[in-house]
Length: 224
Image 1 (spheres, rainbow, N blue to C red):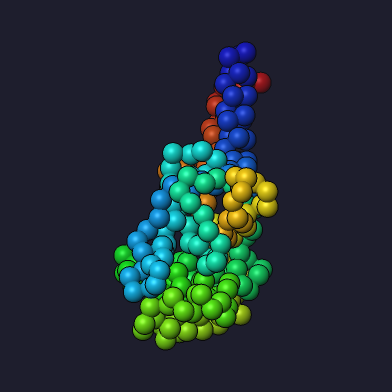
Image 2: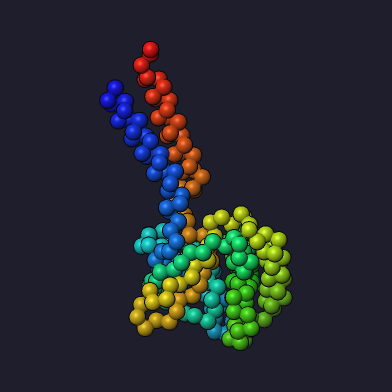
């Protein structure tokens, strides 16, 4: 009987950890390290890097792609800093950024789609920036304007959207970057490590273990 109690207690403890893990896995802030980037936009002068900017979170070996949304600020490979993660839902500007990032992150997105989305988010967060406009490759602006209009319309009608539950805005925490470096850039994307189980899977597993513990107890309970 003691072994049964130990077994049930263990199952309940494990299931509790699994049920809570979807919330604990997404902290309010984390240490981000830039490891690599995607391709450069050809035709811009100077050429600039576009999505994806690949990051290591809290020292993880897994790389997570994010989209840069600050044109003027600069970062370098290997640089680390702390960033606050802000959910996009409830803020129109952030919902627009998430919608645009999702176009570039979609499976099979073309190089042109990625470049247009990248530049659209730069124009969204740095409107009227003279360097940004001067370096824009020829032929991009009509596509950018179209994407910005669609994103704005989506955000106006879906301010509390649940379409992007895992996408966050990454805002650098001042003073956490290496001494002498300027302010890091802002980013948007999904911080979930590629190999991590989805929260829904963890909840299902945790619930299943609770059910198993109850079933074991019911089968082994003394008959009165």
